[in-house]
Length: 224
Image (cartoon, rainbow, N blue to C red; front, side, top):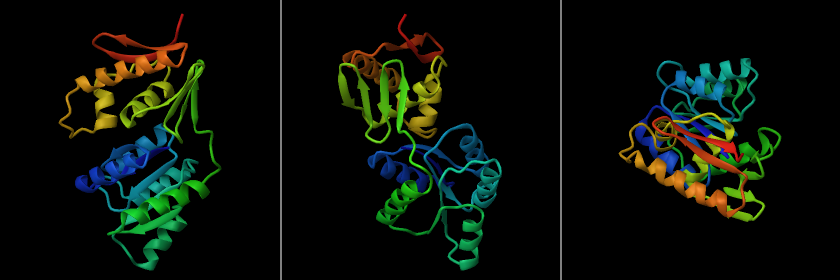
C-alpha cells in the first residue's frame, strides 16, 4: 500500500518512513502543507498521515481542501494538541482518525491498519500492464512464468513506472521520491535497481521492458 507522510520534523519523518517501509508500506514523505496538498491531489494514495502543525499550510487546511476537492483518501492526523476541541475540529473536517504525540509505534501501526481497513472500500491492490501485475498488498510481481517478492526500493520504482507507462522518469525523480532529498546514497543505485527489475521481469515471462533514454531516464513499455 502507498502512503503519503506529511511531517515537517525531519528526524521524525525519517524514523516513521523507516518503520512504515519495514511494515511493507511504500512511503512518499513531504515536509510542509503546500507540498502535502499538491502530492495528495496529483497522486493516488491508500492513506495519508498528516501532521497538524506544518509550515506553508497547516494540516487542517490541507485536510479541508482535500475533502472539498472530493478526495476521500483515509487520513490519520498527528498532533501535539490533546484538547478535545482540536480532535473534534480534525474529525469534523474529515479526518478518519487522530493520534496525539508522543505516540507508540505499535499504536500508530494498529490505527493505520484499522483506518485502511475501514476508511474506504478495499481497492484492487494490483497494478497491471501488459501480462504482468504488481501486487501492492504482498509486494509481489506476477507474470506468466511465476511470481516473486520485490525488495522495497524495487517495488517503489516499478510502481512509479507502472503508474505512468511510457512516461520517462529521471534518476533525480527516483532519488527524490524514494531515497529522499537528504539521502547520501549515490545516484548509481537507481541503475542497479533498474538492472535487478529488468532481470526479474524477464524471469517471469513479462511482455514489457524498462527502456532507458540515455541522459534522461527510464520508462516502461510493451515489447514490440
